[in-house]
Image 1: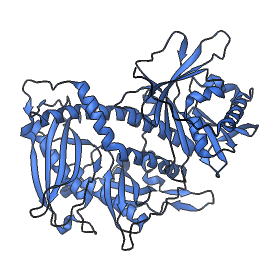
Image 2: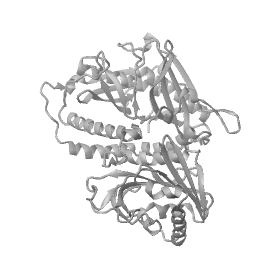
Image 3: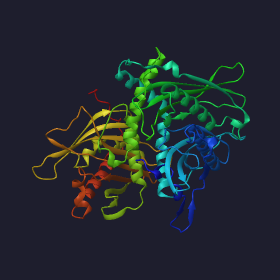
Image 4: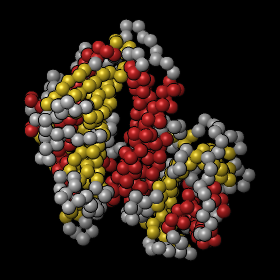
Length: 578
Protein backbone atom coordinates (compact mmCIF):
# COMPACT_ATOMS: atom_id res chain seq x y z
CA UNK A 1 0.00 0.00 0.00
CA UNK A 2 2.88 2.34 0.46
CA UNK A 3 3.79 4.73 -2.32
CA UNK A 4 5.06 8.31 -2.46
CA UNK A 5 1.66 9.57 -3.55
CA UNK A 6 -0.36 7.63 -0.99
CA UNK A 7 0.66 9.97 1.80
CA UNK A 8 0.35 13.48 0.42
CA UNK A 9 1.48 13.30 -3.19
CA UNK A 10 4.81 14.46 -4.52
CA UNK A 11 6.08 17.99 -4.92
CA UNK A 12 5.51 17.72 -8.66
CA UNK A 13 1.86 16.80 -8.12
CA UNK A 14 0.99 20.03 -6.32
CA UNK A 15 -0.96 21.44 -9.31
CA UNK A 16 -3.86 19.68 -11.03
CA UNK A 17 -5.99 20.48 -14.05
CA UNK A 18 -9.66 20.05 -13.14
CA UNK A 19 -12.30 18.90 -15.65
CA UNK A 20 -13.35 22.53 -15.99
CA UNK A 21 -9.86 23.33 -17.25
CA UNK A 22 -8.95 25.35 -14.15
CA UNK A 23 -5.57 24.91 -12.51
CA UNK A 24 -6.15 23.65 -8.96
CA UNK A 25 -3.85 23.76 -5.96
CA UNK A 26 -4.93 22.55 -2.54
CA UNK A 27 -5.65 25.70 -0.47
CA UNK A 28 -4.24 24.11 2.72
CA UNK A 29 -0.92 23.15 1.13
CA UNK A 30 2.24 24.53 2.73
CA UNK A 31 5.80 23.93 1.52
CA UNK A 32 9.11 24.35 3.29
CA UNK A 33 12.57 23.97 1.75
CA UNK A 34 15.71 24.06 3.88
CA UNK A 35 19.34 23.55 2.90
CA UNK A 36 21.14 21.43 5.49
CA UNK A 37 23.95 23.40 7.12
CA UNK A 38 26.62 22.08 9.51
CA UNK A 39 24.68 23.55 12.45
CA UNK A 40 21.74 21.25 11.55
CA UNK A 41 23.88 18.11 11.30
CA UNK A 42 24.98 15.45 13.77
CA UNK A 43 28.46 14.00 14.28
CA UNK A 44 28.21 12.02 11.02
CA UNK A 45 27.45 15.03 8.86
CA UNK A 46 23.81 13.95 8.51
CA UNK A 47 20.74 16.05 9.30
CA UNK A 48 19.71 15.59 12.92
CA UNK A 49 16.33 13.82 13.08
CA UNK A 50 15.37 16.20 15.89
CA UNK A 51 15.85 19.16 13.56
CA UNK A 52 13.86 17.38 10.85
CA UNK A 53 11.00 16.74 13.30
CA UNK A 54 10.91 20.45 14.17
CA UNK A 55 10.68 21.41 10.49
CA UNK A 56 7.99 18.79 9.84
CA UNK A 57 5.91 19.91 12.81
CA UNK A 58 6.10 23.60 11.95
CA UNK A 59 5.14 22.97 8.30
CA UNK A 60 2.19 20.80 9.32
CA UNK A 61 1.06 23.33 11.94
CA UNK A 62 1.03 26.14 9.36
CA UNK A 63 -1.09 23.97 7.05
CA UNK A 64 -3.55 23.22 9.87
CA UNK A 65 -3.79 26.89 10.81
CA UNK A 66 -4.34 27.89 7.19
CA UNK A 67 -7.41 25.66 7.14
CA UNK A 68 -8.66 26.42 10.66
CA UNK A 69 -8.10 30.16 10.53
CA UNK A 70 -6.92 30.10 14.15
CA UNK A 71 -4.10 28.77 16.32
CA UNK A 72 -3.57 25.00 16.38
CA UNK A 73 -1.58 22.64 18.59
CA UNK A 74 -0.03 19.25 17.82
CA UNK A 75 -2.07 16.38 19.28
CA UNK A 76 -0.20 13.39 17.83
CA UNK A 77 2.16 12.22 15.10
CA UNK A 78 1.70 8.73 13.69
CA UNK A 79 4.51 6.20 13.33
CA UNK A 80 7.38 7.42 11.16
CA UNK A 81 9.89 5.28 9.26
CA UNK A 82 12.98 7.06 7.92
CA UNK A 83 14.05 5.50 4.63
CA UNK A 84 17.17 7.62 4.06
CA UNK A 85 19.44 10.03 5.88
CA UNK A 86 20.09 13.59 4.60
CA UNK A 87 23.58 15.03 4.28
CA UNK A 88 25.02 18.52 4.72
CA UNK A 89 24.54 20.55 1.55
CA UNK A 90 21.44 18.68 0.47
CA UNK A 91 17.97 20.27 0.46
CA UNK A 92 15.04 19.11 2.56
CA UNK A 93 11.67 19.65 0.87
CA UNK A 94 8.58 19.29 3.06
CA UNK A 95 5.01 19.51 1.83
CA UNK A 96 2.00 19.38 4.15
CA UNK A 97 -1.74 19.64 3.57
CA UNK A 98 -4.92 18.92 5.49
CA UNK A 99 -6.46 15.60 4.45
CA UNK A 100 -9.65 15.89 6.50
CA UNK A 101 -11.20 18.01 9.25
CA UNK A 102 -13.42 16.68 11.99
CA UNK A 103 -15.20 18.74 14.66
CA UNK A 104 -12.20 20.52 16.17
CA UNK A 105 -9.31 18.34 15.00
CA UNK A 106 -7.80 17.63 11.61
CA UNK A 107 -5.32 15.26 9.99
CA UNK A 108 -2.37 16.74 8.14
CA UNK A 109 -0.34 14.64 5.70
CA UNK A 110 3.40 15.35 5.54
CA UNK A 111 5.85 14.25 2.86
CA UNK A 112 9.61 14.77 3.21
CA UNK A 113 11.96 14.46 0.25
CA UNK A 114 15.68 15.08 -0.14
CA UNK A 115 17.08 16.93 -3.14
CA UNK A 116 20.69 16.84 -4.30
CA UNK A 117 21.30 20.08 -6.18
CA UNK A 118 24.50 18.83 -7.82
CA UNK A 119 23.14 15.68 -9.45
CA UNK A 120 19.58 16.97 -9.91
CA UNK A 121 17.84 14.07 -8.15
CA UNK A 122 15.16 13.94 -5.48
CA UNK A 123 14.02 10.99 -3.34
CA UNK A 124 11.55 10.26 -0.57
CA UNK A 125 12.82 10.31 3.03
CA UNK A 126 9.60 9.69 4.97
CA UNK A 127 5.94 10.49 5.17
CA UNK A 128 3.79 11.00 8.25
CA UNK A 129 0.33 11.92 9.42
CA UNK A 130 -0.12 14.40 12.26
CA UNK A 131 -3.26 15.41 14.15
CA UNK A 132 -3.81 19.02 15.16
CA UNK A 133 -6.47 20.53 17.39
CA UNK A 134 -7.81 24.02 16.84
CA UNK A 135 -7.61 26.13 20.00
CA UNK A 136 -10.75 27.59 21.48
CA UNK A 137 -11.61 31.13 20.46
CA UNK A 138 -13.09 33.85 22.64
CA UNK A 139 -16.56 32.81 21.45
CA UNK A 140 -16.11 29.17 22.44
CA UNK A 141 -15.20 25.85 20.82
CA UNK A 142 -14.02 25.86 17.22
CA UNK A 143 -16.17 24.18 14.57
CA UNK A 144 -13.87 23.43 11.64
CA UNK A 145 -15.09 23.73 8.08
CA UNK A 146 -15.09 20.57 6.00
CA UNK A 147 -12.32 19.72 3.56
CA UNK A 148 -13.66 19.35 0.01
CA UNK A 149 -11.54 16.84 -1.99
CA UNK A 150 -11.12 17.81 -5.66
CA UNK A 151 -8.84 15.08 -7.02
CA UNK A 152 -8.85 11.30 -6.84
CA UNK A 153 -5.79 11.38 -4.58
CA UNK A 154 -7.46 13.86 -2.23
CA UNK A 155 -10.59 11.71 -2.15
CA UNK A 156 -8.52 8.67 -1.17
CA UNK A 157 -6.78 10.55 1.63
CA UNK A 158 -10.05 12.11 2.81
CA UNK A 159 -11.60 8.66 3.06
CA UNK A 160 -8.58 6.98 4.68
CA UNK A 161 -8.24 9.78 7.23
CA UNK A 162 -11.41 8.56 8.95
CA UNK A 163 -9.93 5.08 9.29
CA UNK A 164 -6.62 6.41 10.62
CA UNK A 165 -8.52 8.55 13.14
CA UNK A 166 -10.35 5.46 14.33
CA UNK A 167 -6.96 3.76 14.81
CA UNK A 168 -5.66 6.68 16.87
CA UNK A 169 -8.69 6.69 19.15
CA UNK A 170 -8.28 3.00 20.01
CA UNK A 171 -4.47 2.94 19.76
CA UNK A 172 -3.56 3.01 23.47
CA UNK A 173 -6.14 0.44 24.52
CA UNK A 174 -5.39 -1.86 21.58
CA UNK A 175 -1.61 -1.72 21.99
CA UNK A 176 -1.98 -2.40 25.73
CA UNK A 177 -4.04 -5.53 25.00
CA UNK A 178 -1.61 -6.67 22.31
CA UNK A 179 1.38 -6.16 24.59
CA UNK A 180 -0.16 -8.18 27.42
CA UNK A 181 -1.06 -11.03 25.04
CA UNK A 182 2.25 -11.04 23.17
CA UNK A 183 4.41 -10.66 26.28
CA UNK A 184 2.69 -13.63 27.88
CA UNK A 185 3.49 -15.77 24.81
CA UNK A 186 7.16 -14.73 24.66
CA UNK A 187 8.08 -16.30 27.99
CA UNK A 188 10.82 -15.28 30.42
CA UNK A 189 13.74 -12.96 29.65
CA UNK A 190 16.76 -14.79 28.26
CA UNK A 191 20.16 -14.40 29.90
CA UNK A 192 23.00 -13.58 27.50
CA UNK A 193 26.69 -13.79 28.24
CA UNK A 194 28.46 -10.42 28.22
CA UNK A 195 25.11 -8.59 28.15
CA UNK A 196 25.23 -4.86 28.93
CA UNK A 197 23.25 -3.76 32.02
CA UNK A 198 20.30 -1.61 30.94
CA UNK A 199 21.09 0.80 33.77
CA UNK A 200 24.25 1.83 31.90
CA UNK A 201 22.10 3.29 29.10
CA UNK A 202 19.81 5.35 31.34
CA UNK A 203 19.71 9.08 30.51
CA UNK A 204 17.98 11.93 32.32
CA UNK A 205 18.18 15.52 31.18
CA UNK A 206 16.29 18.70 32.04
CA UNK A 207 15.46 21.61 29.74
CA UNK A 208 14.14 25.03 30.72
CA UNK A 209 11.45 26.16 28.27
CA UNK A 210 12.44 29.63 27.07
CA UNK A 211 10.66 31.95 24.60
CA UNK A 212 12.67 30.63 21.59
CA UNK A 213 11.32 27.14 22.39
CA UNK A 214 7.69 28.30 22.32
CA UNK A 215 5.37 28.74 19.38
CA UNK A 216 3.24 31.78 18.65
CA UNK A 217 0.74 30.56 21.28
CA UNK A 218 3.42 30.59 24.10
CA UNK A 219 3.13 26.80 24.38
CA UNK A 220 6.24 24.67 24.01
CA UNK A 221 6.68 23.90 20.34
CA UNK A 222 5.67 20.26 19.74
CA UNK A 223 8.56 19.79 17.34
CA UNK A 224 10.97 21.08 20.00
CA UNK A 225 9.74 18.51 22.52
CA UNK A 226 10.15 15.74 19.94
CA UNK A 227 13.68 16.99 19.17
CA UNK A 228 14.67 16.93 22.85
CA UNK A 229 13.25 13.40 23.14
CA UNK A 230 15.24 12.27 20.11
CA UNK A 231 18.40 13.75 21.66
CA UNK A 232 18.23 11.77 24.92
CA UNK A 233 17.17 8.62 23.05
CA UNK A 234 20.26 8.91 20.83
CA UNK A 235 22.50 9.25 23.91
CA UNK A 236 20.96 6.13 25.46
CA UNK A 237 21.46 4.16 22.23
CA UNK A 238 25.08 5.35 21.98
CA UNK A 239 25.84 4.14 25.50
CA UNK A 240 24.84 0.60 24.55
CA UNK A 241 26.83 0.30 21.32
CA UNK A 242 29.66 2.80 21.93
CA UNK A 243 29.06 4.08 18.42
CA UNK A 244 26.96 6.64 16.56
CA UNK A 245 23.46 5.16 16.04
CA UNK A 246 21.02 5.98 13.23
CA UNK A 247 17.34 6.47 14.04
CA UNK A 248 15.20 4.27 11.80
CA UNK A 249 11.65 4.59 13.15
CA UNK A 250 9.51 6.24 15.80
CA UNK A 251 6.29 4.86 17.22
CA UNK A 252 3.40 7.27 17.58
CA UNK A 253 3.95 10.52 19.49
CA UNK A 254 0.87 11.37 21.54
CA UNK A 255 0.84 14.65 23.46
CA UNK A 256 -1.01 14.08 26.72
CA UNK A 257 -0.86 17.67 27.93
CA UNK A 258 0.59 21.10 27.17
CA UNK A 259 3.86 22.66 28.29
CA UNK A 260 4.52 26.40 28.53
CA UNK A 261 7.31 28.95 28.84
CA UNK A 262 8.93 28.62 32.26
CA UNK A 263 8.31 24.87 32.55
CA UNK A 264 11.17 22.52 33.33
CA UNK A 265 11.01 19.57 30.96
CA UNK A 266 12.50 16.36 32.33
CA UNK A 267 13.49 13.91 29.58
CA UNK A 268 14.29 10.28 30.40
CA UNK A 269 15.49 7.50 28.12
CA UNK A 270 16.70 3.92 28.45
CA UNK A 271 17.37 1.02 26.08
CA UNK A 272 14.50 -1.43 26.62
CA UNK A 273 15.89 -4.25 24.49
CA UNK A 274 18.43 -4.94 21.78
CA UNK A 275 18.01 -7.38 18.94
CA UNK A 276 20.57 -8.61 16.41
CA UNK A 277 20.96 -5.37 14.48
CA UNK A 278 18.52 -2.96 16.12
CA UNK A 279 17.55 -1.67 19.54
CA UNK A 280 14.46 -0.08 21.05
CA UNK A 281 14.83 3.00 23.25
CA UNK A 282 11.96 4.15 25.46
CA UNK A 283 11.78 7.88 26.12
CA UNK A 284 9.37 10.09 28.03
CA UNK A 285 8.95 13.81 28.68
CA UNK A 286 7.54 15.22 31.93
CA UNK A 287 7.07 18.86 32.94
CA UNK A 288 6.90 20.79 36.20
CA UNK A 289 7.02 24.36 37.38
CA UNK A 290 8.22 25.38 40.83
CA UNK A 291 7.12 22.84 43.42
CA UNK A 292 4.32 21.38 41.29
CA UNK A 293 4.23 17.61 40.67
CA UNK A 294 5.51 16.19 37.38
CA UNK A 295 3.05 16.20 34.46
CA UNK A 296 3.37 13.50 31.77
CA UNK A 297 3.72 15.28 28.43
CA UNK A 298 4.74 12.58 25.95
CA UNK A 299 6.19 9.08 25.52
CA UNK A 300 7.66 7.34 22.50
CA UNK A 301 9.63 4.28 21.42
CA UNK A 302 12.47 4.76 18.94
CA UNK A 303 14.30 2.09 16.96
CA UNK A 304 18.00 2.61 16.21
CA UNK A 305 20.62 0.84 14.10
CA UNK A 306 24.40 1.21 13.84
CA UNK A 307 25.63 1.29 10.25
CA UNK A 308 29.07 0.27 9.02
CA UNK A 309 31.10 1.90 6.25
CA UNK A 310 28.89 0.24 3.61
CA UNK A 311 25.71 1.49 5.31
CA UNK A 312 24.86 -2.05 6.48
CA UNK A 313 23.50 -2.69 10.01
CA UNK A 314 26.06 -3.95 12.54
CA UNK A 315 25.56 -6.62 15.21
CA UNK A 316 24.69 -5.11 18.59
CA UNK A 317 25.47 -6.25 22.15
CA UNK A 318 22.58 -7.74 24.11
CA UNK A 319 20.96 -6.01 27.04
CA UNK A 320 20.51 -7.28 30.61
CA UNK A 321 17.27 -5.77 31.96
CA UNK A 322 16.79 -4.42 35.43
CA UNK A 323 14.58 -6.43 37.80
CA UNK A 324 10.79 -5.93 37.73
CA UNK A 325 10.19 -2.83 35.55
CA UNK A 326 13.24 -3.53 33.40
CA UNK A 327 12.04 -7.06 32.64
CA UNK A 328 8.58 -5.73 31.83
CA UNK A 329 10.07 -3.20 29.39
CA UNK A 330 12.27 -5.95 27.91
CA UNK A 331 9.25 -8.20 27.25
CA UNK A 332 7.11 -5.37 25.92
CA UNK A 333 9.89 -4.36 23.52
CA UNK A 334 9.84 -7.90 22.08
CA UNK A 335 6.08 -7.65 21.68
CA UNK A 336 6.31 -4.25 20.01
CA UNK A 337 8.92 -5.62 17.60
CA UNK A 338 6.49 -8.33 16.55
CA UNK A 339 3.73 -5.75 16.16
CA UNK A 340 6.00 -3.56 14.00
CA UNK A 341 6.92 -6.49 11.77
CA UNK A 342 3.26 -7.42 11.37
CA UNK A 343 2.37 -3.83 10.57
CA UNK A 344 5.18 -3.51 8.02
CA UNK A 345 4.28 -6.84 6.42
CA UNK A 346 0.59 -5.98 6.09
CA UNK A 347 0.52 -2.24 5.47
CA UNK A 348 3.76 -1.04 3.90
CA UNK A 349 4.46 -3.94 1.53
CA UNK A 350 3.25 -3.70 -2.03
CA UNK A 351 0.65 -6.23 -3.11
CA UNK A 352 3.18 -8.09 -5.26
CA UNK A 353 5.41 -8.66 -2.22
CA UNK A 354 2.90 -10.49 0.00
CA UNK A 355 0.58 -13.44 -0.56
CA UNK A 356 -3.12 -12.72 -1.00
CA UNK A 357 -3.96 -14.41 2.29
CA UNK A 358 -2.15 -13.02 5.31
CA UNK A 359 -2.07 -15.04 8.56
CA UNK A 360 -4.47 -13.58 11.12
CA UNK A 361 -3.77 -13.41 14.84
CA UNK A 362 -4.51 -10.99 17.66
CA UNK A 363 -1.25 -9.10 17.23
CA UNK A 364 -2.01 -8.07 13.64
CA UNK A 365 -5.82 -7.84 13.83
CA UNK A 366 -5.81 -4.04 14.06
CA UNK A 367 -3.56 -3.63 11.01
CA UNK A 368 -5.33 -6.30 8.95
CA UNK A 369 -8.63 -4.54 9.58
CA UNK A 370 -7.09 -1.19 8.60
CA UNK A 371 -5.59 -2.70 5.45
CA UNK A 372 -8.87 -4.39 4.57
CA UNK A 373 -10.94 -1.21 4.80
CA UNK A 374 -8.26 1.01 3.26
CA UNK A 375 -7.90 -1.21 0.19
CA UNK A 376 -11.65 -1.01 -0.43
CA UNK A 377 -11.69 2.77 0.05
CA UNK A 378 -8.86 3.16 -2.48
CA UNK A 379 -10.85 1.12 -5.02
CA UNK A 380 -14.00 3.16 -4.30
CA UNK A 381 -12.10 6.42 -5.02
CA UNK A 382 -11.07 5.32 -8.53
CA UNK A 383 -12.86 7.25 -11.27
CA UNK A 384 -11.97 5.62 -14.58
CA UNK A 385 -14.52 2.78 -14.49
CA UNK A 386 -15.98 1.62 -17.81
CA UNK A 387 -19.66 0.62 -18.06
CA UNK A 388 -19.66 -2.90 -19.50
CA UNK A 389 -23.39 -3.62 -19.50
CA UNK A 390 -26.64 -2.74 -17.78
CA UNK A 391 -29.71 -4.85 -17.19
CA UNK A 392 -32.64 -4.89 -14.75
CA UNK A 393 -31.38 -1.60 -13.22
CA UNK A 394 -28.12 -3.35 -12.31
CA UNK A 395 -24.93 -1.91 -13.86
CA UNK A 396 -21.65 -3.79 -14.31
CA UNK A 397 -18.42 -1.76 -14.58
CA UNK A 398 -14.83 -2.88 -15.14
CA UNK A 399 -11.46 -1.26 -14.62
CA UNK A 400 -8.12 -2.62 -15.83
CA UNK A 401 -5.12 -0.94 -14.23
CA UNK A 402 -1.52 -2.15 -13.95
CA UNK A 403 -2.55 -5.55 -15.35
CA UNK A 404 -5.13 -5.96 -12.57
CA UNK A 405 -8.83 -6.36 -13.41
CA UNK A 406 -11.42 -4.92 -11.02
CA UNK A 407 -15.18 -4.89 -11.40
CA UNK A 408 -18.10 -3.31 -9.61
CA UNK A 409 -21.84 -3.94 -9.65
CA UNK A 410 -24.14 -1.03 -8.84
CA UNK A 411 -27.85 -0.74 -8.11
CA UNK A 412 -30.34 1.29 -6.05
CA UNK A 413 -32.92 0.03 -3.57
CA UNK A 414 -35.79 1.73 -1.77
CA UNK A 415 -34.54 0.77 1.66
CA UNK A 416 -32.84 2.96 4.30
CA UNK A 417 -29.04 2.75 4.21
CA UNK A 418 -28.66 1.65 7.84
CA UNK A 419 -31.01 -1.30 7.29
CA UNK A 420 -29.21 -2.24 4.08
CA UNK A 421 -25.90 -2.17 5.93
CA UNK A 422 -27.26 -4.37 8.71
CA UNK A 423 -28.65 -6.99 6.33
CA UNK A 424 -25.51 -7.19 4.18
CA UNK A 425 -23.09 -7.14 7.13
CA UNK A 426 -23.70 -10.76 8.09
CA UNK A 427 -22.22 -12.80 5.23
CA UNK A 428 -24.24 -15.82 6.33
CA UNK A 429 -27.38 -14.13 5.01
CA UNK A 430 -25.77 -13.93 1.58
CA UNK A 431 -26.59 -17.60 1.07
CA UNK A 432 -30.23 -16.49 0.70
CA UNK A 433 -29.56 -14.51 -2.48
CA UNK A 434 -26.11 -15.38 -3.89
CA UNK A 435 -25.85 -18.81 -5.48
CA UNK A 436 -22.05 -18.60 -5.23
CA UNK A 437 -22.39 -18.82 -1.43
CA UNK A 438 -23.18 -22.50 -0.99
CA UNK A 439 -22.11 -22.52 2.67
CA UNK A 440 -21.09 -19.75 5.04
CA UNK A 441 -20.21 -20.05 8.71
CA UNK A 442 -18.68 -17.80 11.35
CA UNK A 443 -15.21 -19.01 12.27
CA UNK A 444 -14.27 -16.24 14.70
CA UNK A 445 -15.90 -13.07 15.98
CA UNK A 446 -12.78 -10.94 16.47
CA UNK A 447 -14.69 -7.91 17.76
CA UNK A 448 -17.85 -5.93 17.03
CA UNK A 449 -16.59 -4.81 13.62
CA UNK A 450 -14.45 -7.74 12.42
CA UNK A 451 -15.65 -11.28 11.74
CA UNK A 452 -13.87 -14.19 10.06
CA UNK A 453 -16.01 -16.49 7.90
CA UNK A 454 -15.51 -19.69 5.97
CA UNK A 455 -17.36 -19.54 2.65
CA UNK A 456 -17.79 -22.51 0.31
CA UNK A 457 -18.64 -21.99 -3.36
CA UNK A 458 -19.83 -24.64 -5.84
CA UNK A 459 -17.70 -25.79 -8.75
CA UNK A 460 -18.29 -24.01 -12.06
CA UNK A 461 -17.42 -27.17 -14.00
CA UNK A 462 -19.30 -30.44 -13.89
CA UNK A 463 -17.59 -32.93 -11.59
CA UNK A 464 -14.98 -30.42 -10.41
CA UNK A 465 -14.16 -29.42 -6.85
CA UNK A 466 -15.70 -26.35 -5.32
CA UNK A 467 -13.69 -23.58 -3.69
CA UNK A 468 -13.65 -22.41 -0.11
CA UNK A 469 -12.42 -19.10 1.30
CA UNK A 470 -11.39 -17.95 4.77
CA UNK A 471 -12.41 -14.30 4.74
CA UNK A 472 -12.15 -11.36 7.12
CA UNK A 473 -15.17 -9.05 6.93
CA UNK A 474 -14.60 -5.57 8.41
CA UNK A 475 -17.62 -3.32 8.89
CA UNK A 476 -17.54 0.46 9.21
CA UNK A 477 -20.37 2.91 9.83
CA UNK A 478 -20.03 6.47 8.46
CA UNK A 479 -17.78 8.90 10.32
CA UNK A 480 -20.10 11.69 9.16
CA UNK A 481 -22.79 12.32 6.55
CA UNK A 482 -20.24 12.42 3.72
CA UNK A 483 -19.07 8.85 4.32
CA UNK A 484 -20.69 5.63 3.13
CA UNK A 485 -21.29 2.44 5.07
CA UNK A 486 -18.57 -0.10 4.23
CA UNK A 487 -18.26 -3.87 4.38
CA UNK A 488 -14.73 -4.84 3.33
CA UNK A 489 -13.69 -8.44 2.67
CA UNK A 490 -10.29 -10.07 2.14
CA UNK A 491 -8.76 -13.52 2.56
CA UNK A 492 -6.78 -14.49 5.66
CA UNK A 493 -5.30 -17.76 6.87
CA UNK A 494 -5.99 -19.47 10.17
CA UNK A 495 -4.03 -22.47 11.50
CA UNK A 496 -7.33 -23.92 12.75
CA UNK A 497 -8.76 -23.99 9.20
CA UNK A 498 -6.17 -25.34 6.73
CA UNK A 499 -7.14 -26.32 3.17
CA UNK A 500 -8.99 -29.64 2.81
CA UNK A 501 -9.16 -32.29 0.09
CA UNK A 502 -12.84 -31.52 -0.55
CA UNK A 503 -12.28 -27.96 -1.73
CA UNK A 504 -9.70 -25.88 -3.57
CA UNK A 505 -8.67 -23.00 -1.34
CA UNK A 506 -9.51 -19.72 -3.09
CA UNK A 507 -8.35 -16.21 -2.19
CA UNK A 508 -9.93 -12.76 -2.27
CA UNK A 509 -7.57 -9.79 -2.29
CA UNK A 510 -10.06 -6.93 -2.00
CA UNK A 511 -13.86 -6.96 -2.19
CA UNK A 512 -16.86 -5.53 -0.42
CA UNK A 513 -19.91 -3.28 -0.38
CA UNK A 514 -20.07 0.50 -0.38
CA UNK A 515 -23.51 1.70 0.74
CA UNK A 516 -24.48 5.35 0.13
CA UNK A 517 -27.54 7.04 1.58
CA UNK A 518 -29.11 9.06 -1.24
CA UNK A 519 -32.23 9.92 0.76
CA UNK A 520 -34.02 8.64 3.84
CA UNK A 521 -35.50 5.79 1.79
CA UNK A 522 -33.20 5.39 -1.25
CA UNK A 523 -29.81 3.68 -1.02
CA UNK A 524 -27.13 3.11 -3.65
CA UNK A 525 -25.31 -0.20 -3.26
CA UNK A 526 -22.01 -0.83 -5.03
CA UNK A 527 -20.19 -4.15 -4.81
CA UNK A 528 -16.46 -4.06 -5.61
CA UNK A 529 -14.04 -6.90 -6.32
CA UNK A 530 -10.42 -7.03 -7.41
CA UNK A 531 -10.47 -10.17 -9.49
CA UNK A 532 -8.09 -12.96 -8.43
CA UNK A 533 -7.63 -16.41 -10.00
CA UNK A 534 -10.05 -17.74 -7.40
CA UNK A 535 -12.77 -15.22 -8.24
CA UNK A 536 -12.34 -14.68 -11.98
CA UNK A 537 -14.01 -17.94 -13.15
CA UNK A 538 -17.26 -16.87 -11.48
CA UNK A 539 -17.57 -13.54 -13.30
CA UNK A 540 -15.56 -13.85 -16.53
CA UNK A 541 -18.60 -14.74 -18.67
CA UNK A 542 -20.50 -11.72 -17.32
CA UNK A 543 -17.62 -9.38 -18.11
CA UNK A 544 -17.40 -10.49 -21.75
CA UNK A 545 -21.19 -10.40 -22.13
CA UNK A 546 -21.84 -14.15 -22.41
CA UNK A 547 -23.87 -14.40 -19.23
CA UNK A 548 -26.18 -12.36 -17.04
CA UNK A 549 -25.76 -14.33 -13.81
CA UNK A 550 -24.53 -11.35 -11.81
CA UNK A 551 -27.56 -9.32 -12.79
CA UNK A 552 -29.78 -12.14 -11.57
CA UNK A 553 -27.82 -12.41 -8.32
CA UNK A 554 -28.06 -8.70 -7.51
CA UNK A 555 -31.72 -8.59 -8.48
CA UNK A 556 -32.15 -11.40 -5.95
CA UNK A 557 -30.19 -9.26 -3.47
CA UNK A 558 -32.66 -6.41 -3.99
CA UNK A 559 -35.59 -8.78 -3.41
CA UNK A 560 -33.90 -10.14 -0.27
CA UNK A 561 -33.43 -6.64 1.14
CA UNK A 562 -37.05 -5.69 0.48
CA UNK A 563 -38.32 -8.88 2.10
CA UNK A 564 -36.16 -8.48 5.21
CA UNK A 565 -35.98 -4.72 5.75
CA UNK A 566 -37.99 -4.91 8.97
CA UNK A 567 -36.17 -7.98 10.32
CA UNK A 568 -33.37 -6.37 12.30
CA UNK A 569 -31.76 -9.07 14.40
CA UNK A 570 -28.68 -8.95 16.56
CA UNK A 571 -25.18 -9.35 15.10
CA UNK A 572 -23.79 -12.89 15.03
CA UNK A 573 -22.67 -14.13 18.44
CA UNK A 574 -19.03 -15.14 18.86
CA UNK A 575 -18.52 -18.89 18.51
CA UNK A 576 -16.62 -20.95 21.01
CA UNK A 577 -12.88 -20.44 20.94
CA UNK A 578 -11.19 -22.88 18.54
